[in-house]
Image (cartoon, rainbow, N blue to C red; front, side, top):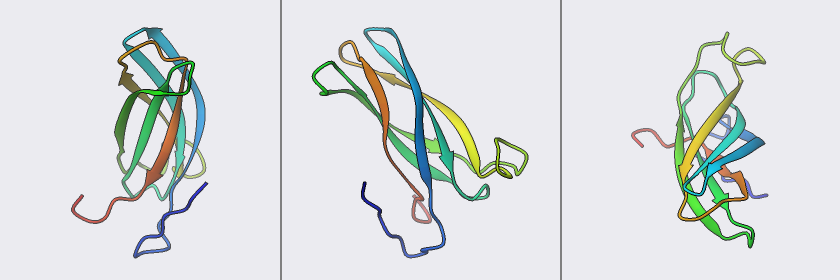
Length: 105
């Protein structure tokens, strides 16, 4: 696991895969949790993989700031679901990385 440093070292984001489902050969749903400052926005890249671990779908998900009463841990940890279009049947889905975008991104 690699950490990407930013100009503001106090802002960090972590993630944890929760699960996935593949309703059909064209879609994967990836469930994950994100822990960050509730007032901060983040982005996470998620990917769907086939049985040979090849990427068959990929997407960047915007994680908006949230209220302190959302999720758990005073709003720091929230659960998200990303729907990813796939080019063939996926057998798993994971979060690749999450980060705090630079101002203006």
